[in-house]
Image (cartoon, rainbow, N blue to C red; front, side, top):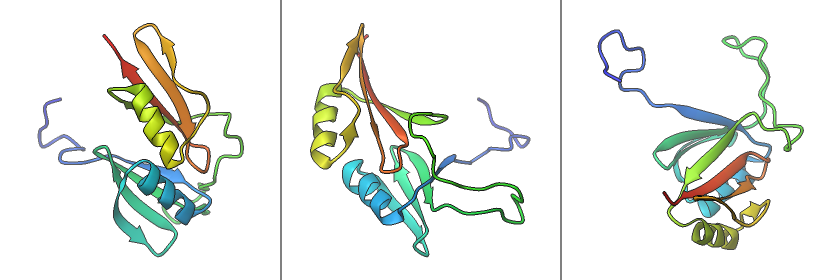
Amino acid sequence: MKTNDNDPFKDSAITTILVVSDILKSKDFYVDVLGAKIFREYGGDSLVLEFLGNWILLVTPGGPTEDKPEIHFAVTANTNIVSHSYTIRVKDCKRSYQILKERGADFITPPFIRGAESRCFFRDPDGHLFEISEFRG
């Protein structure tokens, strides 16, 4: 996409906000298991991470504010209903699975092979869904 002075996102980056129940438990998972880098911490209730060239902001549950007067940030009540997930394209799904499992990732299943793709899913401590996927094309 060509940028110009009318581009509202010129020189911008996107951040995903994830609501977590325990900031320290989530910090351990994202840093120690996934290898994310801490960019900034805010007073013990939020944390900015850099992960695979993207920003993730972990926040604890909270109620409305002046700029979002009817919005509540809450941990998902049912981790089997997904409205948001991450897919990480990897070079070797089986190897990535083994490394992440050794680091403590809790996988739903081992890698499945579907044609030219191998994939498997795991969750963070609050149930946010991650997929690792290898495409052999």
